Image (cartoon, rainbow, N blue to C red; front, side, top):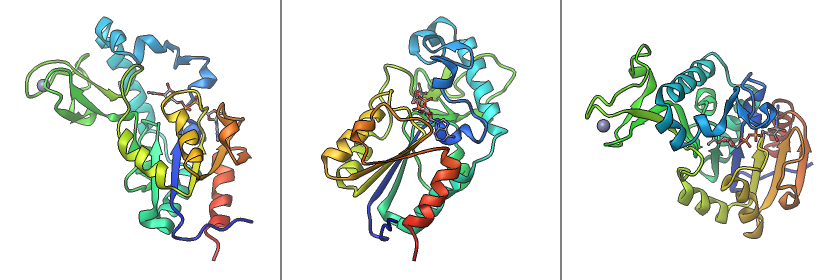
Length: 237
Ligand code: OAD
Ligand code: ZN
């Protein structure tokens, strides 16, 4: 049994698998498609240029779907970790569903954006999707009139918070990946950085992630079942 003291510096990276038990389908299980759409059509800038109405319809649907889901035991276990490790804890997520915040995590670094956020393709001003008119196929910027686009990091675009993430990877003692296939970079490479910088690396996943060779401790199973038990162990008095 392993305990991690309150001053252990812990970084957690989550992926689609942590939301699977909340009812959100992962990317890999839909065979390279995202809810029956080709990734190039709905998750690239060129797809948006070709058919912005389709891309907006798609993300509005994803946002509505995520609104009807609830965090699960794994999201709540991470809130407990945040309370326990306090300023020594950071949470990075590739998910755009907002479930970490919904569970109560204070500052998840949403490196791939958030479904409830959008920004202007011209003046870059940011807005909330819930402030836009759902009956308009392509929402327009209230400031300059240009198209708004979903605030999602598409393929070929640079994720958010990379310098903060790199900084915390370099000084962490333990790096934990949860529910992520290890196929999409740069997130897939974080485990290598952390390991090479001397951290202990832990994975919790339904199947072996692609970057398993950099993992010291692999816990196979559903994160909603495995993680709460591990958190109890790590934070045991
Ligand atoms: P994936 O769909 O690639 O991987 C999900 C992983 O979660 C798989 O390895 C599953 O085995 C595992 N899994 C499924 N159910 C689980 C459960 N209940 N408990 C634990 N693990 C479970 O999702 P990501 O790795 O998040 O990018 O994908 C990375 C990025 O690729 C996404 O952020 C997205 C996508 O293109 C953008 O949207 C920009
Ligand atoms: Zn604008």
